[in-house]
Image (cartoon, rainbow, N blue to C red; front, side, top):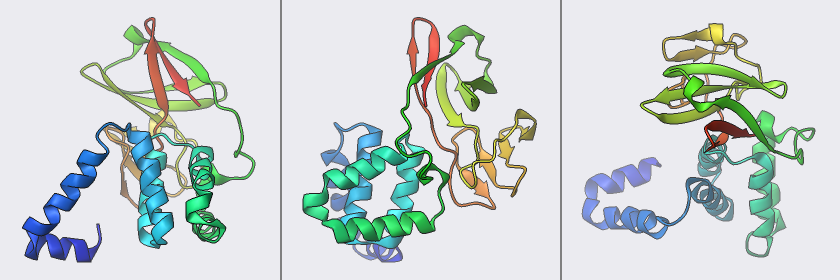
Length: 207
């Protein structure tokens, strides 16, 4: 949130809070991924660089792929116009996000059967699949799945780099809280979430 909005919340709380309530209520029937994509589109439309960077990272964190983000912008071409999309892509490239590597764009994703559900230990565990790996955080039968690759330069982070709930990338010392994926030190982007599903006693990941 901008300094200006924080200021208005302090001095005109009764006027501004209904605005945020309306935004939340208006999107209550949308899933998290869709809301994140729409937030990116609004920032592209307004050409708000700080907001675009913030919501782009959030969209990736919420499980959207680079392909999905690009598709969302291109589908909105009649409204956004090509110049705003080019403006947004320039900023995305400057952010040097590995997901937008041209070699990865267009690569087909698929479901991978990862592990039997009752074999997942409480807490954090690391699992390999199809030449990749992920971290699963299990808390009271609730699951979160994160890519094992650092969002900075796609360095694979080994399980030995986990101390308690803190995961440290050995290359540039970015530190993450694996309970929620947030970057807590040295970096600026959270671990990427991996979409998953539970079917017939197995946990599947979509990657």
